[in-house]
Length: 162
Image (tube, rainbow, N blue to C red; front, side):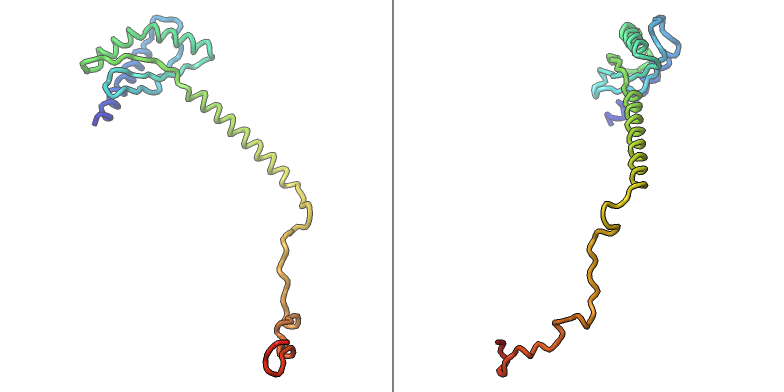
């Protein structure tokens, strides 16, 4: 039950912040920001807002500074549009998902290239020894079976072996 309320409040905060940032702030440092996720604590006192920024590291740093300076104004905007007794404090966290996704894509591309090079080596490879190095069982004929012949020749007359 409490988890549903947290999810509703987090979703509402995400929508309010996205609408406000879409209208823009008066801060020229703010870049193209996308709110990716909002997580609210169980007591609804603190909200962690995850965001991404298009651009390089300088744009990310400038946007982080702009969001930090506008946190109070954004919190009051959330308080106006959120019907709760207390307005949660906001913490803006740069979401690392795009960088992690790029890193994973690069690793997968490298693994694919290595697999292709190994497949190329395997296609042109030759056996070091015989083509089939495993020992095959000999074919047993009835003529070669020494145990099947008369074993009574070694027995004495009383049936004991000598």
